[in-house]
Length: 332
Ligand SMILES: NC(=O)C1=CN([C@@H]2O[C@H](COP(=O)(O)OP(=O)(O)OC[C@H]3O[C@@H](n4cnc5c(N)ncnc54)[C@H](OP(=O)(O)O)[C@@H]3O)[C@@H](O)[C@H]2O)C=CC1
Ligand SMILES: CCCCCCCCCCCCCCCC(=O)[C@@H](N)CO
Image 1 (tube, helix red, strand yellow):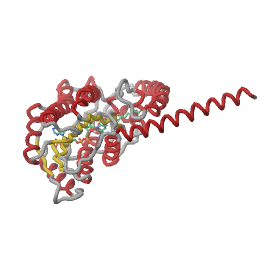
Image 2 (image 1 turned 90 degrees about the vertical axis):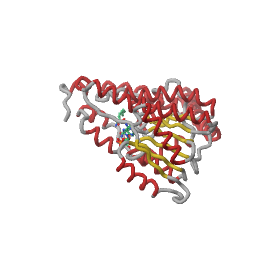
Image 3 (image 1 turned 135 degrees about the horizontal axis):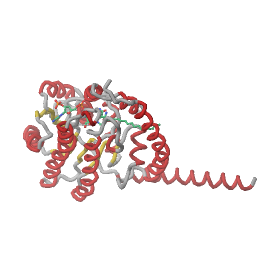
């Protein structure tokens, strides 16, 4: 009798302690978060003509920023600029520009930044490297060229953009700037069908982690976003080549709209988070595969990491079983 009472008291004390510490950590985080205000600032968004990039650009417009979007197809860029402008807090004061460029080459990524600065006559204070591509498939049937092209856009495009923007920020002593990179939950885990894509998103994560450490001394904030499925034109395109086994497995992730993802991304940036995830699975994966990335809430993240330990263990067994069930990995 006495024993289980004592056990209950201990249990509730521990849970209560975790709760109090968690709330305390939250309060400290709020107080320490660096200022994030884009009003009247030049925000640069690669891949800003559609999907996640366009939703981010629209939110920046709502927040009073001057926005430059970058992509390769001019017709889509033009339409997007009009849609972004329509979201402006004050369309007369804010300037919206587009630049046509292929950011997967160092010349293209660098020239795009120069052109943006010339058009806006303002230095870039906030850069969002969103442009990326995914062509899922059975690795053994995919080409070496695709492996190279995917790395060139997803990783090198992000690295060239971050490199040029950061150099300019430091040269012009722009403290309080932000560089936001887009990885994926597939930068947390490797999944069948994404053998070409996952490594590019792990690479982005590695770059973001290392750059955060370097650039903090210059007052530049680095963030890395890890979204799950987003309903975008890119997602529709990738589904055309996605193996059925991949569709079955990733069905566990319900998916979000670009607008929901953008809202979540800005919430994370405002909270001063380095690693930002917006859906529940992404948040648990972020905690379980954190390595030495900064915590978002030291207590809650620990609890979620513990939760993920059994869940993902069992989940992986189910995934392996599913793969054997699809004896032949056809594109359907
Ligand atoms: N959709 C999803 O489920 C998920 C997406 N992500 C990541 O989010 C980011 C955005 O994805 P999403 O919105 O779906 O992508 P979309 O394919 O819908 O849009 C991609 C954007 O990037 C531009 N772009 C593509 N190639 C280049 C290039 N070489 N140079 C410059 N711009 C280029 C496109 O314009 P244009 O073609 O005209 O150049 C377009 O504006 C990507 O990094 C993606 O990997 C992460 C997790 C999930
Ligand atoms: C109880 C169940 C727990 C287990 C859940 C684990 C689920 C993992 C889901 C992986 C989702 C992959 C999204 C791909 C996003 C992406 O980057 C591509 N669309 C490329 O654009």
